[in-house]
Image (cartoon, rainbow, N blue to C red):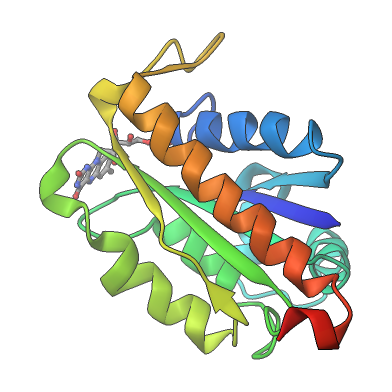
Amino acid sequence: MRVITLAGSPRFPSRSTALLALSQQRLESRGVEVIPWNIQNFVPEDLINARFDAPALLAFKEDLASADGLIVATPVYKASFTGALKTLLDLLPERALEHAVVLPLATGGTVAHLLAVDYALKPVLNALKAQEILHGVFADDTQITHYDRQPELVPQLTLRLDEALETFWQALARRHLPYALAV
Ligand SMILES: Cc1cc2nc3c(=O)[nH]c(=O)nc-3n(C[C@H](O)[C@H](O)[C@H](O)COP(=O)(O)O)c2cc1C
């Protein structure tokens, strides 16, 4: 099984990226191959100028095409996901996620924007024809500490992330079952 993680925060280190790093550790301990990507891997001018032939974009699309799953993480910016992430998603082909199970993660300063993933990010993932989009995990800033060194999550968030990763892993595993067993 191969999974891409995509960090959509313009900042590094970052809370939402820390959630991806922890997810990567958990999945790798189950034998999943994880390929980490983040928005800093792309040249900003390529994204702003919609350069569809940018080398990093071509490499990312290739990785995506061979992946069974995607975990995408974003901070909430102005009640939505980041503009930087949108500039990348805009450059993907229409069916870029048609073979992928997607788990969205988000962090925000206030729980008032808890639903940003549902009303902002999920429609874009749908537009990319994601095969299955799982319930996301939202964390507020108080729930993640030391994200610049060794990130620590409050127990309630650890539980929610572990549950989400279990569901993600099961969805990936189902895709590897012979058809007769999967239905
Ligand atoms: C430009 C900007 C806009 C933000 N807008 C919101 C917002 O609308 N709602 C919210 O809950 N948090 C907002 N925040 C707070 C971030 O979402 C929050 O601190 C997040 O955890 C940062 O994630 P990161 O460390 O991965 O970048 C904003 C932060 C910045 C820098």
